[in-house]
Image 1 (cartoon, rainbow, N blue to C red):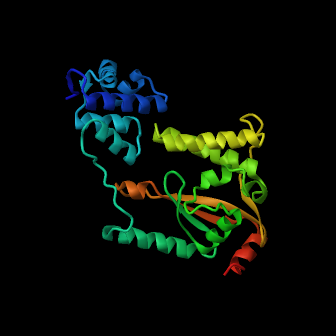
Image 2 (tube, one colour):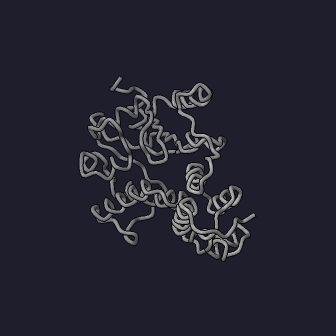
Image 3 (cartoon, rainbow, N blue to C red):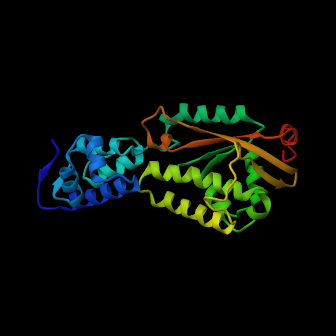
Length: 268
């Protein structure tokens, strides 16, 4: 069932607003969403106005049509008055031990190269010794480190990151895609705004950037000028929001000097 016509209630209105924001963030019309989900555009209009209340199955169908991440699907269900369907398990829970062991194994195997574990908003949740040494060079002074806020600040990063404009452009492009995939996520949108502002500050526009096949991170450090290339691992085999939202950035030396420094780390 697609839902019934009713006098708008708090749940219907809250759901309608949330659905419209998600749809618009995806740059889809009501007709686009209706065709994707095999429902009528009229019904989408009724849902967004609060004139119709969705079933749980309809909420899940719409979330799938909008390609919403697990956490956003939970939020849409809650807005409609339903319980969340995807678990959000604390990382220190016993059931997460196999996953924690896998993360520890991956980070240990990556040594002596830097590895940084972040959540979906690029808050640092764990870091290898080499990554801690690199982050200390930036000296944010914060207990909670957010990589996007770090590289868009006007602090030490402007002196430490040699190719800051290139790094900002690469991260802006990546974050714009992540924000589009997430739909309406105010925190991601704020991070994209910070990157766009930082790009303008550095004089980098959409039509002035050079297109390089690889964009290294080049840092001036007490150990010399170090250059890195990154691979980012996502964990897509779990229904748990906590796991799906994580990403593990594995940094590799981009030149022989960096490799030599990392293989005999002076910070240990």
